[in-house]
Image 1 (cartoon, rainbow, N blue to C red):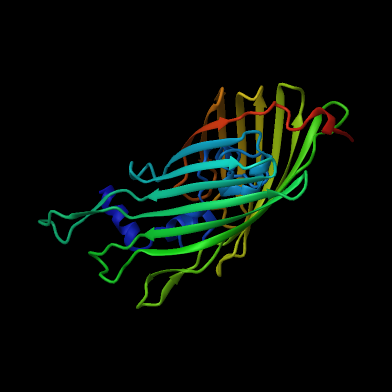
Image 2: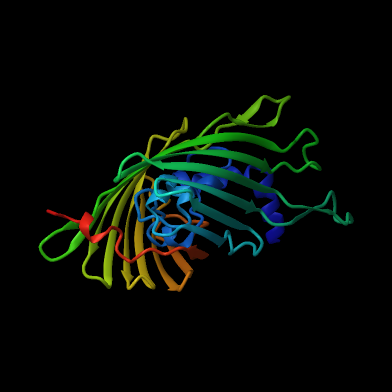
Length: 351
């Protein structure tokens, strides 16, 4: 029965379902690009444009990479989706970054959204044929420090969407296109306050600028990309050499014909001795419907160069959400750690 339900979701536009969940009712193509793909950002309320850099910065703000404390990193994330209906719908995310020098970094990533296997039957006696709709995005970015505190990046993205079922629509085909992101990131030097040190952070990312997706050339039907602007800021309270509390706020604007809302969230991350982290956050859709609000928690554990993160999402929406009780898992390897302090002692400034 679950497979039959999933089949109808595919036939009537699975993309619309996820777009509505992610964007407060807005409908665009390939909305999986807006799904938070890593556990660290997800644990802080799906925030990442102005948080401290990590392996998974590619989705949120690649301009953060030059400020990374690591020479290079590799990360893999897994997100089960619609787990209450099926056990084979998932988002996979693979990331890699490498600092060319102290000022520039390149990064690659692959996001694969598998919609599981569904058996399509013409009638009850038909043995059926298995179909596996899927979507993917392959990214490459280059980021450059323009000063000691500010960097920018440009990202190129290839997008492929295979949601059409040939047995239902013979004219259906795989749609593909490309997109570009432009991002910027600010990170202050470490500032001395009376009882603690602090770092200011800020960032923006204008993502998915590109041509529409066309699944059927003859019909002229096109789907716009989820062009989105993220803008955020944050402050890290460095309480002592062992304890840091990071705070973040972020706002999102989706540029779609039927979307006039701005969504946003708040996130907190407590880090102890760089090997243990606790996170929480809240995301709010202020379009008045209240259909996409949620609370998140998460944790991270680091042993030498290996880091494991997990997060949990609890929906507080008025209506049922496909994201409720969602878990995410991330594993990353960071090579070339620098000292725990983000800056050299002589670079600190007194407030």
